Image (tube, rainbow, N blue to C red; front, side, top):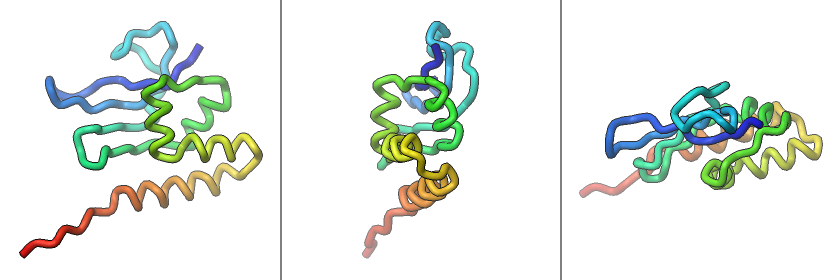
Amino acid sequence: MVRIRLRRIGLKGQPTYRIVAADKEAPRDGRFLEILGVYNPRTNPATIQMKEDRVFHWMKNGALPTESVAQIFKTAGTQDRFDRFKKGEALETLVAEAAEAEAKRAAPVKTRRD
């Protein structure tokens, strides 16, 4: 069975994670099938970058996200878009919407400096 889960990268005390599709039996930082994105919890707000078309592909074929990845998907809106994809909405529309949402999240926060 394929799971969508986090794979830890980064230095000691500075974790960054890759979102990967991996076999359920593979070790956490071991073998994986495909890199689907990156999650960095150390930034404020957390940085989430994903290839949503590939995430949809794996989930359509039966891959299940772990609890932590499901929470990331919910935060990024991927889960809602996948539900709409299952109901028949076009993949191109959803991927364009995801790119727009990611651009909005990545926009720098303006602060006032005196």
